Amino acid sequence: MMFRTILSASAFALLIATSVGSAQAQSLSQALAAAYEHAPELQSALLDAKASAENIVQAKSRKLPTIGASIGGTQSITSASGQALLLGSNPVTNSQLNAGLSYNQTIFDNFQTEAQIEQARASAEAAEYQLRNTEQNVLLNVVQAYMAVLSGRELLSLRQANVDFFRAQLQSAQDRLDVGEGTRIDVAQAQARLAQGQAAYQAAVGSLETSQATFQRYVGSRPQSLSTSHNYANLIPRSLEGALGEAEIGHPAILLAKAGIRAAQAGSDAASAAFGPTASINGQVGGSWSQGNRSVNGGTGSLSAQLGFQINIPIYAGGALGSGVRQANLQQIGAEVDAMSAYDQIREAVISAWSGIQSADAQIQAAQAAVSSSNTVLEGVIQERDLGTRTTLDVLNSQADLTSSREALINASSNKIVATFSLLSAMGRLTAQDLALPVEVKTAVPYTQAVEDVWQELRTVAE
Image (cartoon, rainbow, N blue to C red; front, side, top):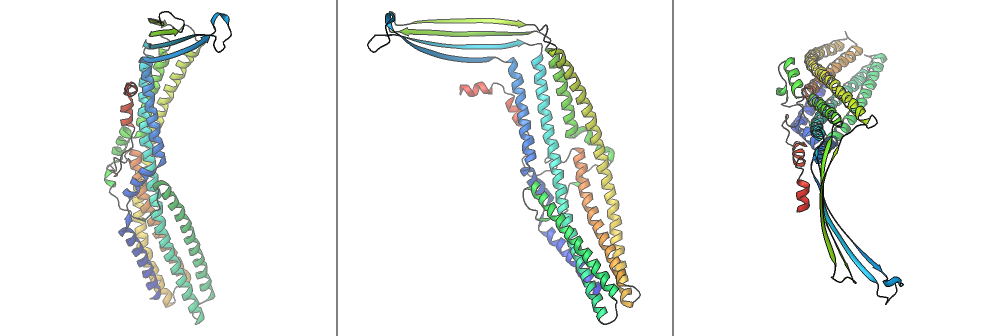
């Protein structure tokens, strides 16, 4: 009866610890939202996407005019009639002022600029998809860290209860030895199991500390009381084919690869366009004013203007043009190969995550049955040991079996949640928007739309 009481008390303590943690839980959604705001990887990817958008402006500028203004002046002093420039020698002074405007514009470049603009836009789009892909990786890492802490705490509580049980068994074996009902073998076996239990407990402590440090790195704060509850399983489709279909359509890695193909194609077009002619116009308007202390009319001035055009036709460039085309074509082929690889990797990830969910379900059912069976066996072995038909070793082995079954249940439950989010990630749906996280979605799209206004710089100068 004493051993059944100890067993029930340990299980009750574990249940109470779990219940208290759930009552004051830091939800998975809260952890994901905090990580989304905190993650430096996301901020870096966002900055990269914004920087990539600036390439669009720079590409557009090649077909737009460049307008500049200049102003300058000189002041010269010379001596009169070759005399030394001394005080009182009445030197000759002359002031001159020059000012002008210049205008230059490429009006035709064999559509090279258009290809470069398309390449820049595709690259900016690829950077945005890279941001989405980084977002998924960050959120999946958070889920893994969250579940590692949660399962680590459950394992720690379980192993603490296990140590308490082995300590009670050791005390019971020692008490029976003292009254002549037990043996030293029983005591030694109980001592060995207690030492093993304590070692397993310390290993759980170390593992939990590592998991908590990882959690803090992603989320930005120490983990509080956590909970396994979430409502994201409804995002999972009912069939593997449905999951594969969603992944092929919307996964950012696949969209990134497609944007890469577009960028490479545009790069090939731009390289080919370098063989064609270019035409440009240029104009200048300027004035010059001069005045000296010997001038009769008080000064002179002049205005001038000119307008010209230029056509360039490449004939030979030492092989650079042909090499550029070949390089661009190879990069286009490489982008297509990368796209096929991304497709295969995403398909593999979806199938693996789907299988992980099915496997975890089976493991949970098996572990639940094992826990129920092991509980019954342990109670029966304790009763038989009290009647003298079983040994302390039998009790210790039964307790070890029960602990293993409980640990398997904890791990399987954690694995199912991780596999669920892994499937969402493989489908391309592990994003702040799909999860409805209470955060402002990080995106470079508004920035890209703003910088496409290439006349903004001129208006800023005018203001």
